[in-house]
Image (tube, helix red, strand yellow):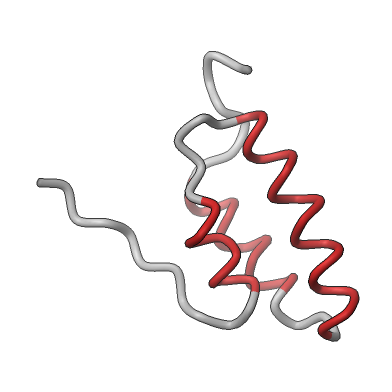
Amino acid sequence: MADNPKFQHRHYKVIADIVSRFPDDIRTIVMREFRDSFMKDNPRFDVGRFEAACNGSPIKRKDKV
């Protein structure tokens, strides 16, 4: 696990936007590969948000409380 994640929200968003344009069968495989890599890199990585964005739902930043 890295001390400083290699990617930021904006990077995840661009990747998810690109993945969302793939055909369903390919999108699922590519999304899982990225997801698994990002989970190892960033312990705060939000799997649900990334998967939703890869499936066409917009990523919205969470409001801090």
